[in-house]
Image (cartoon, rainbow, N blue to C red):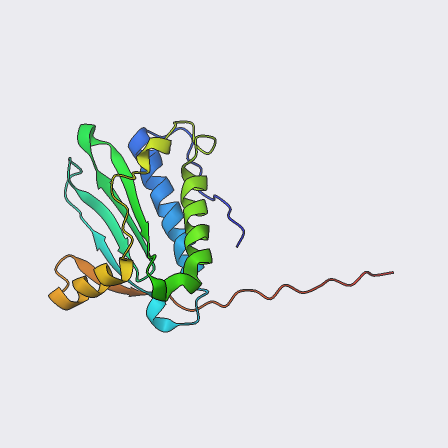
Length: 166
């Protein structure tokens, strides 16, 4: 999957850049998940808080059995992105997808993409490694803050060899 950044992140505040980058990563992540043929892996839970953004606020959260992303407000009212990839033995066939997700995340947030350096917004203080268990837990306890979202299947485009025209 070719990664192109369609959002112009120049000329924005730090939090604006982080938010725009998060939603660009989310858009590309959904496109990545749309290529999966298995329907259960294209379901996700989404949480959006409409309250004022203060320390501790979860602005947006995306939970999928394979991938996890959260945009939240940390100290000094700075937005940060937390992430995760399922690394359980049953999901090893999806490791390439996890690698692509991480490349998208770091490519969109690297300092050469924005006028403001937001590389420190990608937090590694906790990384979710059991996304499927987290997803199932939230399903079982009831969805107070999350809503179901289904990503429609879009098969990968078949690459064809071009013939030389005389």
